[in-house]
Length: 448
Ligand code: NDP
Image (cartoon, rainbow, N blue to C red; front, side, top):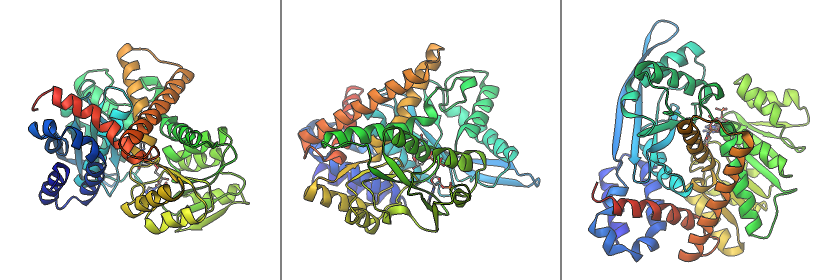
């Protein structure tokens, strides 16, 4: 058994109840195998992989809060501090009923490599709660956030662990969380990112993940000798990532024809209207079904996903495992030649197998989430820099740094792909490029 296989077999035995985490760990371990083999003796001697796959710390706590009816509700809160070899733990907080330790460990593990790829000094972490803010009043969300932070503040800090938003945690939640942190600690520091502009937030942070996704897609498409202009794009989701991916893709001359939510998807042959989606999702917090009231030429398909729509490029921006093998094949058979992931792990294992087959057959392009959606966390790190300097950069400064970072990620991923596999095997490239920096730091820092 190889070193990588041995480590995975042990992990599988220990964490049998964590399927999402095991899936993520297996995918990474399988693809970094050639880089591990090169240094096997060194890595084995310091149990590098055994340490890499276990979080440095997991904090779990109860979050009691009082709802508007006066009843005490109890949710679970978590913070997974996975790896701090190259910087303070950094990764979002997710509030969603699907949150559990396995999901957060999978996200935290992925975050290690993603953060490493940005080239910025940030370690990997993730956290959240099974609290669902949907349908809760502002006052309920505030009380929940205050209770959550009353426990979490003990484990985070500007140089220790800097959470951000993720699904269900947007500007409103970050504001309430920050307020409570400040109230308890008396510190005005960059302990959270994604803050409002009036209290230390960075311009272009809300746009960063979606914009970054489109910037790296543009790099990848150019690398294959094509261009984004006039290409038809299918987007899923209609939240933060999807909205700004739609906006940037349109600015670069492509046409986005779909977006979706939990209720179904919109097909707009004339191009999805960014302003309409933002109005429905940011202001009304309503179903996308409203879109057709405002744009009668569009169609709403309740309960369906957009993967059957003919396109050149697909940008999944909703949630994990939203593209299965059958959906991936449908996309490919309909002429789609590129997938870049705005969401974390939106393609399941069968979908990735289908992309891989198409890559080998005719150069299908696939950029995994840990590289493609790294623009969000990269800009969070830029927010941390601005907080430390007590300065605010302009939108253009942040956006141009973001573009540079995404181009740098593409270059690193393509270089590692060429060195360890085929030049367009970006899955291997992303995992290995992310892994090598963390591995070097872990070896150098000794057995901690
Ligand atoms: P939001 O909560 O803003 O939006 C999520 C969107 O996905 C919503 O439109 C939601 O629909 C839809 N959605 C969620 N679950 C499902 C489902 N099961 N089926 C269909 N649609 C679904 O989240 P973000 O845009 O911030 O995040 C989206 C993805 O991107 C996540 O995987 C996140 O981890 C990842 N990501 C986010 C980053 C960021 O900076 N925000 C950074 C890197 C990755 P509805 O409106 O009905 O709830």
